[in-house]
Length: 243
Image (cartoon, rainbow, N blue to C red):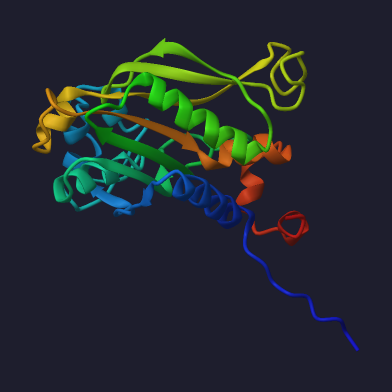
């Protein structure tokens, strides 16, 4: 008699469920939004000016015969829609599929999964942001992790930062994963730009908040030692059955 093989959740679904659970324990709600989005929610409302390079065809899939419609390039559209329908304090995450018009290789896909975390109230600071990111990464990688901020620029936050975490593999000593630096760049973040808050009717003089986004594929590659992101989407059971 042939032994029956039970099915199981795809590794991407497993990671999304784990991330949802981590943030749920920190008091975050899980929000969702459309993958095919208007230019307003994907760009305008996020303080991305009309001439910004992110609007160019090299980054964005524009939907044929649908004026000013794109396949969303990030899950940040969810934060705008959520803020329009809810009043602070707000604390959400938005996991989901996003699309970028770029060449596919071992570290890039034209579609991938991202999770955005978003928090707005009267007392949120960069210190709050750092604490939330640290807790999330430590629980996801099941390791004690240090993080550091570096200045960066994103139109929808001010200040904007890049976040590095100490290498979970070598614990900062230096290895191939961290390119012998002891640090791994993992995500972009920052304090929500006042223009974004004011644009959805939230008083930026009273409220402030943070947002950060990270590629779930990227986290999975680091956690499980996956050397080609395309393996997550090819449906090869020799790969999927390892999870």
